[in-house]
Length: 577
Image (cartoon, rainbow, N blue to C red; front, side):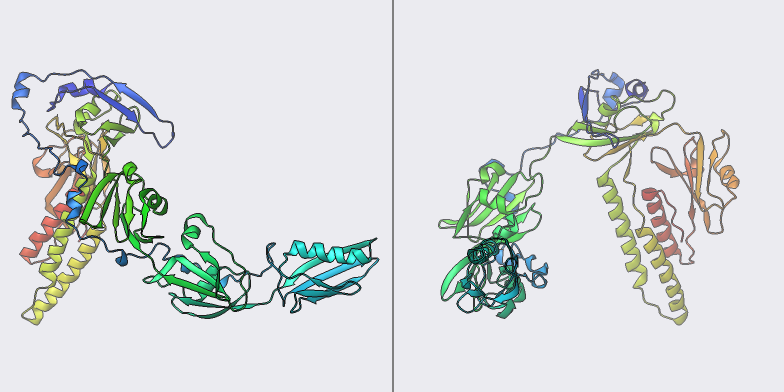
């Protein structure tokens, strides 16, 4: 049975239109499918249509013309100074490079004086020794003489040693070589680092190892893109750490004793803020770069659609707002601020349905979709669904309830915890009340509002416009009454016509000593909260007995009772004082 048929007996405030619904998917399946439902353009009776209030026209004229290249609201904010942001790569030297000294035994290592090479031969010639590389770069092999191995890698050393031995013993000789140990080196690290100095390592250690030994790059003044390795007054390597941060590649010069690593002064920089994973200062090579190059550097969040570019030019300050695809060709210069933003509002919202119904649980709808359009497209089990008790949970309502509760609790603390006492007896009473208030506030703040929006009242359903993230609850017809709060035995009981609220409370053991029998709430299936003594019971209702404020201070008791009601309406929980 469709809600379209069930809802005919309910008064709606808007005619039904044609709606196309798209299922996003359920937890049990990732398959996406769509259903298109044509709804009749139902015309309301004249007596109902005449009662409708005509909504005032909405002025949807944009406050700024985004196509003009000027981003109005943000232009009033101060421009972000690149110096106020951490540099890109600021966390690089927290990874413990200083605790990862290299052993110098990789395949590309070039032998130098002071290293040790193991040479083993067996067969027609027996030999097993560790040979040092002398100051001339030679090792001495008995029967063959000195052999120069300086500047050769392990494979080349093995080939030369094998050739030297087999030239003397050409038959039945096996040869094995291994670069066993390397000569340590001392490297100077200076420039814009935290702790300049002379640090020990191996020739094959990386630049990062020595920089980490020096405490890393000065985040305010040091360059991450201009790091030089100097040997004998000549630059033998230049390191750009952006290549390592983005691509994992880094220059690997083989260090010699007395080399110097110089971190240059930081070059021109720009500020990157907005919808990026981390707001950073990016250093430039030269004085400018293209938008495409910056997008490669920055880590954008999903959904980024526009870019605000602000800075100073020769003809004065400038601020331009570009779609992302147009930003690629723009030129960014030193001192500019680039703000990425997800400024493209989707034309589709996603809502969820729960409770007694058939079909998918999530729907993609047009932004202007209304509740009646969705309800008329959802089939429900016949004679099992309480369509007159439909309710809706909305995140914005939840936030408003949370803020309202927090404001009330803060006023309670401010009013009663800061009051002065004129006598000792009054001070003792206020101390007891203060403890009561603090315990109550702590428990109340732990509760989470439901965000329930009452849309069904007196067999009428408000035809409100849906919002992204709404959860529509279509409850099942219930045969029970729930009794909770300050009763001896909270329980669910079968609904019996003719039984009163007090009858159900007596069946649950009666009131507790802390119960306020003058304040009993009735929570309907649709989320509405009413006074139980003045309202007839219906199946599915919840009887909520409120606690009494345990204080003789009439003003404090009234305030606590008011907040108790507010918490109960927002959370459907009676907080025990």
